[in-house]
Length: 207
Image 1: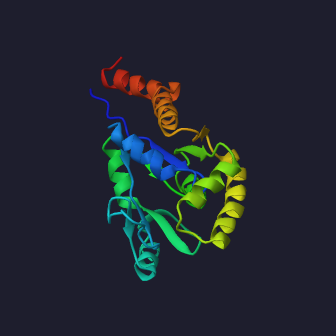
Image 2: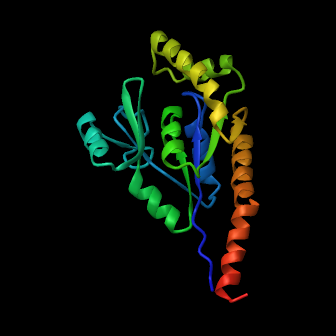
């Protein structure tokens, strides 16, 4: 008897500007066994972002129809834009045995926790609030009012880390990637998951 292990769902989130996208890009270059879910959003593309790669860019009307049709694992409205995770991709990938990493906002992560409590939740934290503000300001795409608004939201989101399984400080991108890979390995080595595999194998062999 062969044992088909289902993939694990990892949720990576943290305050805006903490570097979630940068860390995920670095992880992709490492060619890990992680599949990266592409979120849908109504915000406008930033320079260099491509449809279906960084995001699926939708109009508000298209996104609201996806909500009505229950096509999203989670969705949230953040700073005037919708963000959400297409459900079909996640389910098919997990069933194939491949792990999935969701890079989403904190609001969305809390919805996933409610709908998919078996997920593994990782909070990506900044080294300090001063460094977070510097990173947001460095984008050069937001006004001072928007930056102040993002910082207010970020402080509230950092308080939400109590709902996560792991907290990883993004002090340096490659070190953050090392820590995420360590979490993935540790989760696959949990006694309950390994034991389930062997119990099923023994049952199949009549032991």
